[in-house]
Image (cartoon, rainbow, N blue to C red):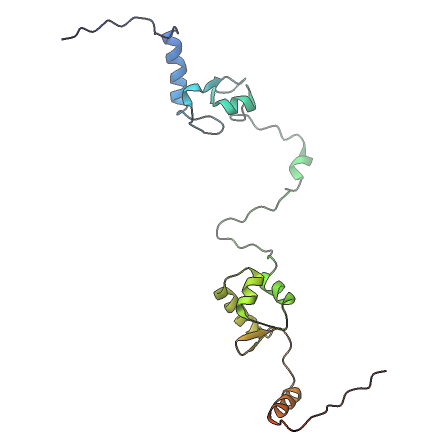
Amino acid sequence: MARRRPRSPTPSRGRCSLYLHHRSSRRERAGRRCGVCHSGRGWRRFEIVHPAEREPVALCGSCRARFGDDPPVGRKPAPASKPARAARKPLSPPKPHTGERRTERRPDRLRAALRKMPGSFSTAMAARAAGLNNDKTLARLQDLERRGEVQRLGNRWSTEPPPSDIASAMDRLEARTSNLRIVRDRPRAG
């Protein structure tokens, strides 16, 4: 049986064991996470910083380089002596909480695309122009048809107003009679 060699009272790295224990216990209490960015990478190289009038904080190398001896954790809020700063409006509107609806609406992409479309177009053409899928575009076009903003012409759509009763009757008559030429009265130019 091999005999064990007795342990030396000092650590092999030349550091005092009390100091090693003190630093590692602080790191352990910090949960092996940086106090600012909460990163756990390279936790053995974390440094303990003692900011003035605050609790000690364990910092990773990047946070130590960024903030030095004054990390942003544990700071007391600045006194509200300047009411003008508190009354200043935020730069961006606050985000709505889950379940709330936004009051302002984004511009309708389909309606904007329909303004640029030719007189007659297919559902796929409208979907491509608006950047929507075909199913959603078809449902929206049917909704716009119910509102009277677009008309269905067979398997195509049109944004032009529907023809009047007289104009459609004349077109039907013209289509049925091939040997007659119908001349419509037009106002004289000039």
